[in-house]
Image 1: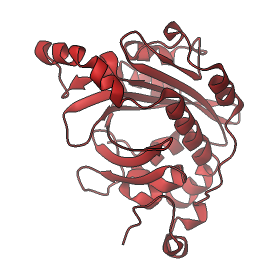
Image 2 (image 1 turned 60 degrees about the vertical axis):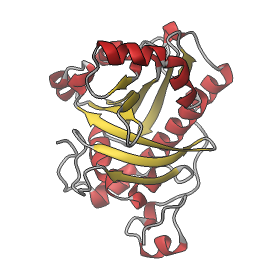
Image 3 (image 1 turned 90 degrees about the vertical axis):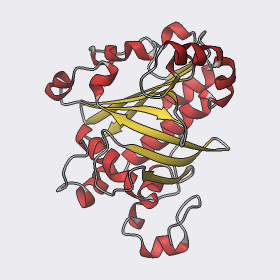
Image 4 (image 1 turned 60 degrees about the horizontal axis):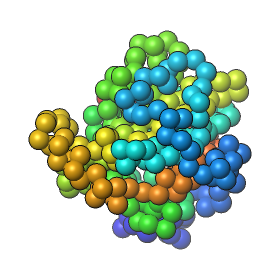
Length: 273
């Protein structure tokens, strides 16, 4: 029987083919994250909205790479830069298709927070674009469920040909509430090569103008979502807790992703559709 609790059970540790990579010890937060938490919420102008996501392909960095804010539209914006020595963008492309097939894989990512991940279509093939991952995890002390619908980077305005030319990967997704038409926000993880490995630039935009009813909004649903912003704001995670969660899971997995990929992913088909 699968283990739907936090962490690996004793049986999992003895029988799972992934047990050698399960490590409940997590390193301290990277310095840029620790500093961002000390500073606290920043001016929203320093964290551009999702409508400017394509700017992430420009050289250099944004005014703020790690931090969070509460914007005037009642949304939250959370950005996080993660340094990843020895890791290639292609490893993350593989991971996003591979991890969603079973809970034991998902738990490797964040052993202190992840409970379960499964594909909504019930299939176990290792691709992610065009599919929805149903996840259960802790954000801080709160147990949360979400439907992560992966989309092509062009949906968020990115130039896919340029991504390929630059050797980069962009993981893009619409985030919703399982079993409902409510879409609460956007996720973007850009992984670009740097000397000695890669860096991940994560962007999370939730609530406010990022919310919608269904995949294609129209005037009536947009007006409804506008009036509901004070209510949907109550459903948003704490932005500081979201920053910590993202920083922990990305840095933790990056620590052993090269070895995991060498054992399980080096000969597989990339995770894209």
